[in-house]
Length: 211
Image (cartoon, rainbow, N blue to C red):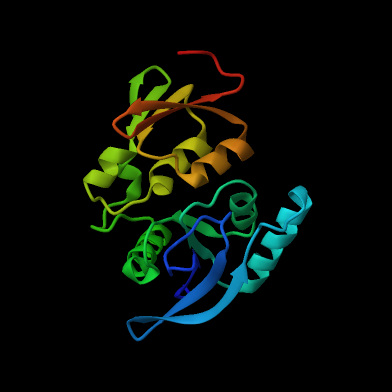
């Protein structure tokens, strides 16, 4: 796997929301160190409608070249869908890129290998069936246990298989890839804020029976 990661940063050099003015930097890892390979100024402020947004994102995808890992503080809406369509793995992270690039690369390589950081297959981490067809999973619990797997590894195979009526997901924020999956797969997602920074996402099929 090419060791290149693209990050959208603001004027302070930290990750920024894609709807802010900033620049896309492609980092490359050589001999254990990350270096800037290329960078491009970017803003969506002058985009005209959906078509304009897509044209802007087409410029970003072209600039990325073979790099297919993208990180920003917040990557949602059209930017997320266009990057995902181009085959990018999308992450949301806060801070200076040099503080987390190694971690992201490690997670990406683990996902490609289909294993957690300690070598156990990620299929061992999956939603729990509470009643017939009704499942539950806590992404917060997975993160607190430092299992070395991503929310996408834990949930996407289960969602794609589709053998459920309802899935309840507890998290501290809704992963951007999950929003994209719900949008493209026709699943319904109800989001509730529970307090203490917790969010519950209840996922159902549009035409499924209720539990």
